[in-house]
Length: 275
Image (cartoon, rainbow, N blue to C red; front, top):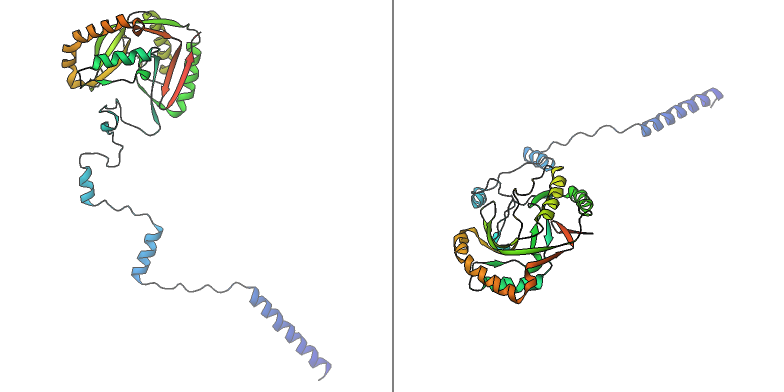
């Protein structure tokens, strides 16, 4: 082989090797899309898309009396037949401000005396007896802490005081669903009104309703369905006699030593000590 022929073959080899490297580095040709049967294509499209299927008619018929079948429904049987003042809403907390009773032991005995023979009358837990300083209001969760701080500042200027409770009276709530047997507050009306003014001012910042006007401060001891209101009114004179006889034995039953004010927001309880 001559020198010229060797150089020619070497050049041809290098050209062939370079071409092979370029072929190996170039992207592979696109694969042809596999054609699926029409039924398989439909299945794939359903997997990648969200389709809302209607509920069966026999399921919807179970909730024909409701605008929203999935809306929360109150079950009054779970809380002694009580009906909520407003429907449950996620993220909304039923709240109120109040003066707690300080003589729960004597109140327990009085409530027992008053309920004797009146099966329709349901007792309040003596530990929860109180005098309201606000309506029951609906609070967003993120409002609770700022309102608690505002109330703490407002009540810091009030001193401890003694409340005297008087005779029994009957009250019915705004919704006309429940009737209450209560002890009416006789003294410190001016102090309580001053507290209500502070509470109203705080709640007004959140466009929440003010307290009832004119206020009638009272401590509820028991309640019943509003359909029994007339029966309870008829029994009231005898109940007043029972209450007066009990008060002779336990004079402090009509007295509440107010050392703090409470703010209940759902399951959160804030206590504000008075000076």
